[in-house]
Length: 118
Length: 118
DNA sequence: GTAAAAGTTAGAGTTAACTGTAAGTCAACT
DNA sequence: AGTTGACTTACAGTTAACTCTAACTTTTAC
Image 1 (cartoon, chains in turn red, yellow, brown, green):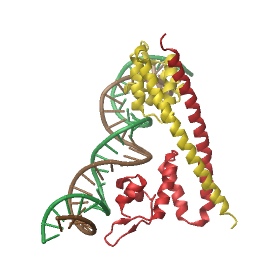
Image 2: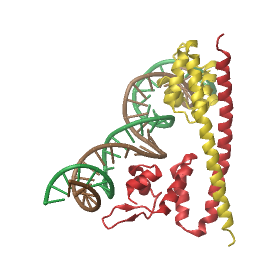
Image 3: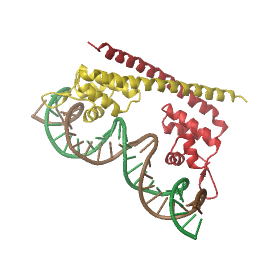
Image 4: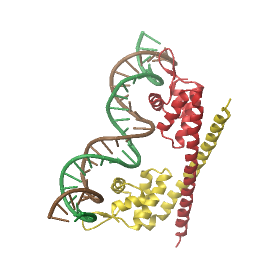
């Protein structure tokens, strides 16, 4: 699949896809005979995982760290698991704080409600 | 209270506090006779609310919109409530998606677990 | 009363994460 | 076979949100 199709599939612009490759987040992207990138289903899985980490507010720099472990093969599995466990911990407390913010927001909305037709 | 004390209280650097004032997020900050800023408890409440919105991923530009309504006084209360209701809606679905990401993360951690001592 | 610390402004610099441009090559369609 | 559109690279520009610098004034501590 060419870069346009992969862009549509992943929701990342061709610019961003080339950028990710440049910073080392995507590696070993195959090329066809004329030098154009060709993406595979394996690439799709990996990008979807990157996006998951990104959407949970992990900076590209940290994702890059995970990517580099992944590149080193199976011997790094427990390191990767450790990274994900740390991330899980952070994500849990992040969600907790978001829930608290939601409660505070509800209270503020209620306050505005109580001010009506005074 | 001077800018340093207010900085410690809010967790925002003096640079950031001046920046927020410059972009119009903080208005009518009082000055003492020598031109130094003096912050009040009212300012503290407002900054804490700004931080709440910021921590729920609201861009400063949107917070600015809320700030501008707030500045126009009581007649804008229902507009402000509307903004907050919209934000609540977004925040709820945002939390929902974070929970889904957490589940996926758990699954990945489990996968790494299953790969151990093979 | 003087030195160090903290305040002021205007404006420049930084960082992360893209996003766009220019100059050129390749592919698809009539 | 020619034109239109998609691809390539290297590198420059953008955006949000700060963060720092320089030059200067004021406050605080000894």
